[in-house]
Length: 592
Image (cartoon, rainbow, N blue to C red):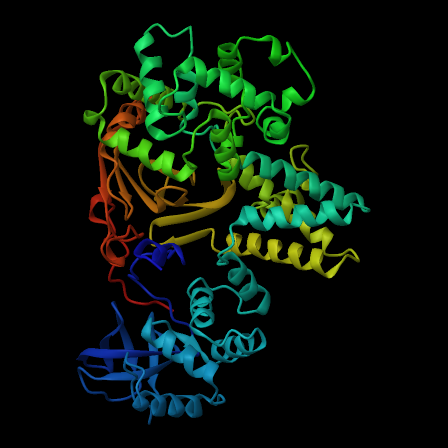
């Protein structure tokens, strides 16, 4: 897995620990830094320093195992675990002996799961109790997850103070699944269609899934070369040299034959469209032709057939590789989708090698692309992020609690329009094992996202959201994390915040976009292992500035970073550029 992939495989929430809360019964490994009169000592758990009252005489600079006994005078009271040596980070044979001693001391069985949990919690400086190890170890064994992934999930549960139950563990495990959420939803929808909807709730679930999968369509889904194809033969264009440049581009890309005059290209295309052997692909590209709507193509001029069909082609059809390649064959070309797009990208990045007509066509394409970014889609006027999260059921329990407190049902609250409650009802039905497994897995994914959706770290609030989108012919997940102080009314401070986008793009592959906002001034960093597409960024930058300005933001910088190692990838951290005053909660003593 590459550098960005390592980061995306488990989005790490939370910042460097600046404080820790200890509860009676918890144990941790700490180092003594300074001893004071009255059995007081300054010690550290990893990077967190605290003052505590000890029940034994210890040596400064040494590491010990401590158990929290309680508190006195607002300070934690700690007891040293005797005859248990501190663990190292190497996981050596000596550590194995020390783990055995610790397990005996606290009365737990010597199992692989228990040893791995103690090693993980110790290395991450995470206090734990005997009950934590006992419950977590049993769950790992019951779920066959006695491995590094399993103990890391347990670490997340303990850090977030989530209930250590099998249900919670399976929900987090499902949320970390590599399969995109959209694919999980699509599989269940297909099973519903195949097995029939004999229950009303299944009909509602199927309809909800279809609606949400349709909303996941991202952008216009038009192929990048569609605008170039539509320029050819377009009589409405003021500059005829642009149409000539578009024709030259298509020949160089291999979509048009190299030596045929454009009139022959039109004739050959018309003949191919009317050929009975091509009926299937033609009906897929132009569904309206199957119903014999409009004037018969055979009665039209070849050039008119070309321009008409280029303007009425199904927008998302050419996103399918096989369909694109068949479309090129109708044009008389020989290029594959990958070859054409790669060469077109090179043209955009190095326009100096092109003819003046081709450069004019590229400039026209860039202007059209800028105009289309952020504009409504044919089927989706505004991509409804907030609405989609509500339809997933991310706020279902919160809405239900509000209804109970108000003592009445709000007209705006409709559980049949939320995916999570529909899944909960579905699991109560006598259905096939396949459908139940798919519904349960999807429900666990949604629950896992809810459990990890929000975290408070000092004055900073962190919120993470994930939703499905469809690029071309496949679903991907967009993961967005907000990091900000809360305003007095409980909202994210839109003047001072940080937003991280974790994306998987078809051409750029794994990408992290780090947006930092200070006094409504926006600094953008894009982390990607590919070479910087300088010309494309410069072409789209004015549109980005314009859109931000319409929201009263000002763009300051756009940086493209090629990370060489994981530490360079954008991560939530105490970033100095955020200029958030954290002194109010750093270095505080632990209070139990």
